View (tube, rainbow, N blue to C red):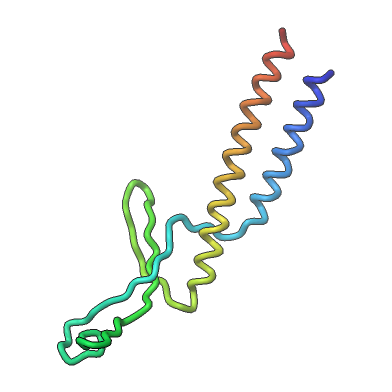
Amino acid sequence: MIIEKEMKRKSERISEIKNEILELGELRTGSLSQQWNVCGNPNCRCKDTKKPKKHGPYYQLSYMRYKKSQTEFISKDNVESVKNHIANYKTFMKLKDEWIDLSIEISKLKKEKKK
């Protein structure tokens, strides 16, 4: 009886996880960083000897996909959206891991129930 209750509780949590995953929206893996550049123009503000002012910020997304490292520049208008997609991906990965762990625990409980 205890095993059945535990299995039911874990199965219900898996159903909740599935629903949470459905609500996530778009996913992006990687990390977003700000880049500041110095140009080649010797008369530019970025080369000022007293108060250099670099160009930027430029936003760059770096990630691995299919075993290949990739980077892409992100416009200022899309930075918040990309941050949300990255957060969604991190949430997805946590939920996926919890789902797998619960499935393993259910399998063990089923095996124990058969004894």
